[in-house]
Image: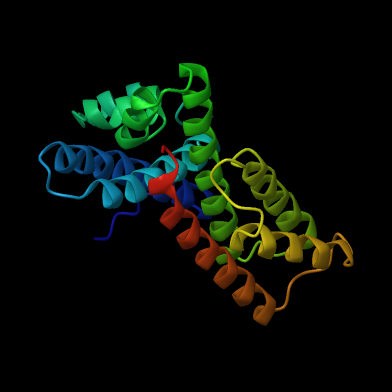
Length: 214
């Protein structure tokens, strides 16, 4: 006899989210160990770690009521992931970013601010792309996400040039959305184009990161 773990759609979505949280923590632990053992390059590690941190922040925020303490969540499921919890809950940035910050001649506060801005920018990228994937394409849903992303670019002026692909494309989309009503929705073609633009901009952003700490 089949035993259902949920009674309605909301419970199923909650269980899916909890499973995603579990997977993110476990994956981060494996990534941290792989980096320490020199099994992945610094560039690969940083790109994946930034993505995991962004996903974790987005997911943990949505699960705030169900999972008030990620530490207790990890204990309850006997996860034994100290490196992941440190990276996700304490540090909030990849080890490579921490190393660049500590090696920089700039002040510690400025270095920490730069690392935080990078992490926030990645989070805004991931959140926007996920929203489009989930068909959250009404103007009043998309516009705030792109505005947040645009604002995060402004905090990285020393890293990103004025003509950075992401800045240009996001400005174009914001201008386009400004001409639409709040309840209007992007067409399927527009949604696909927006996701493509965000994805290509994200890749360009990640490619620019190795010089971020120089």
